[in-house]
Length: 226
Image (cartoon, rainbow, N blue to C red; front, side, top):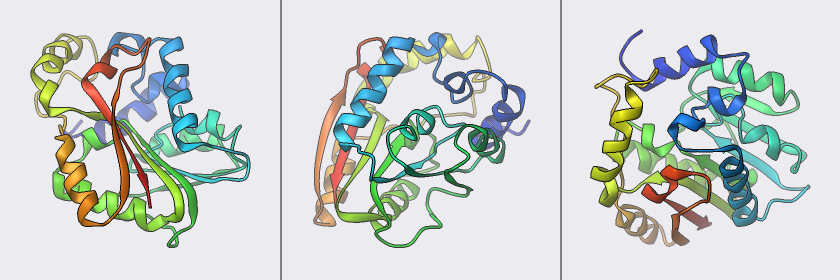
């Protein structure tokens, strides 16, 4: 297996295709999230995006569908993209009615202003650079309607990097993440505030502290109102 995140997620989609969706997508107990914690994560998403039946919803970086599947029971029109083909194939089994694509987050195959609500969950940490992250933000905004909502959820906080790295170091020895080349991308909150202000967008940045999700104390969320 080549040493990059994309190949790792392709690997997980093949090796663990019959496992629980949370496990396939990397949300499992050993990395600091319980079933209760996962339900709390979903509650934050549902509440902050104010999801409803008639919303046209997009998840960028949907993986195998750990979040997209339960959200598809709330919103009747859902779509998802991921760059790992094997994960999208799993997601299609659980969300057969969804408009699912294998593509890059920086080049979304959707029309301008198509979605009411858009989500990325624990995805920005896998991007190759801040330049790429800006391209993704631009695409999220482009595809979301005016007066819609975009939630960039579970962003690694660079001010808490040293503390988180100590925990990650121990977990990396236990499974697939044991690879020195697979570095996460951390963000300053002002990266988002500066860029979003330059685009004249309304936004809210808030800490991600979720009961039952230990790693959430090292992360924050960004809610954007296009």
